[in-house]
Amino acid sequence: MVKSIFGKNAEKYVTSTSHAQGDDLPLITEWLNPKDDSVVLDVATGGGHVARTLAAKVSAVFATDLTKEMLTNTAAHLKAQFKNIHYVVADAESMPFLDNTFDAVTCRIAPHHFPNPNDFISEVYRVLKPGGKFLLIDNIAPADSEKGTFMNQVEKLRDASHVRCLSILEWRMLFQAHGLDEVRSEQRKKKFLFSDWVARTTENQQQRNDVEQLLLNAPEEFKEYFLIQISAGKVQSHQIDQWMALCVKR
Image (tube, rainbow, N blue to C red; front, side, top):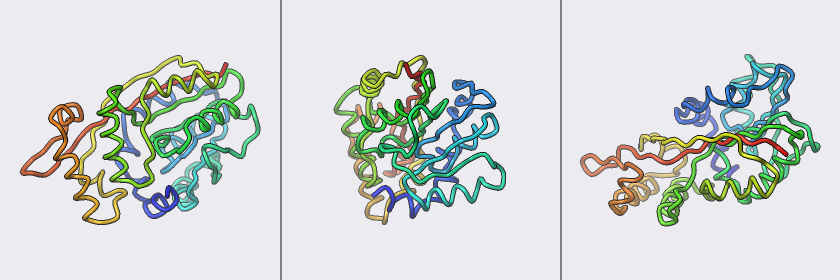
């Protein structure tokens, strides 16, 4: 499903405002503080925005993605400018790298597509060098389970490849279970303009209408929490929570 959805929409993820821009991108280099000789792995690179951000600061970036079409499209955009990004088709839950290989691992706005986050975090720990850094950025479910269920229902209806956004507590439990110590984190609100957001992965107008109706019919407390903005009976925008966490391998 991931290959199908992202293969057809590869170019959209290169140009998507919410992926190509964002307050988190400038923070990646600041938080990781990589050395010139660092070798970094960017898991599920998508449009390559993190790989591009880090390439000028490190020795090499290995950019992986499950979808060959996505990776090919991203490489076409970046190869002329960056010669130290290496593109590898790979599953985030079973990576083709040796143990203790990378100085840092990053993964941005992707883990909610992973069927088994536990396996992903286990792989992150395995491929990191001792003392290596892991930077996770992803959309997160609210701590309130009902709001979290609603958020994931909306995302799944819009994008069939969506699995589940985890809560911060769930991520922290996985970090601790796999030898990753959280040293810094930050939560922020992320706003989506409805027309652009819903068009990125939906297949037809009926699917877009269904997503809009789900938002329009949300309980008032959900509308307040997700700041669902409605004008003339149409959804204009909404917002979700995004979390950025930096961990160090024990």
